[in-house]
Image (cartoon, rainbow, N blue to C red):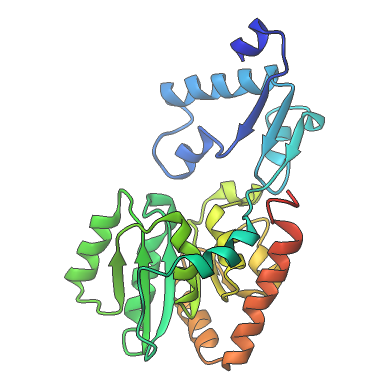
Length: 271
């Protein structure tokens, strides 16, 4: 903001996450706290001084609710380079492979408080009698805690793996029968979601299991898998079972639907 003033040029700000509102939603602080008030002041000052605000959310409601002129706000979602998902498949082989005797559900990405992976583990335990295995690839602040829960409850159908290289993700996703994404049940999602991994999942042509209560359920919109409410392990279990019991060609159709949807709407070239 200050550099834009100094050099007499436009100031454009892109908002990746709604801070400090996300802290409040996850219970890290309250609106009465000093740290919240400081960051809320900075946030509004930046918005007021910006020539344009680029947001990833599905709508402009948040900005309107805090008094920002909606004409100043542009929505440009996250997306995926679809072409790389074809070229990387030929060039890079997945560092992991899964037994074809099981129905393999893959999660890739951060293991953080906002990812609701504890719900995945609860669901895995409910499905422990089935030939369904959950594979979690990535790192994060709650990974060790999740591992302890799995060990303590002797859950055999959850496997943890280290981070893989970004360019290996396309071939890794192809190793799965389905991919999964889980969100916390927090009010902020009424403004929508735009996580990178969901677009990568679409590009992989795999059916998606989505657990979230959001303004823009693009998995449902694309008819690319199953969608259930956030933080509901019983409903998630039933959704996974319904996907598992589908014929292979039915699951393939869901995956193809997702691929067509992302090519049309969220390819980086389109964005």
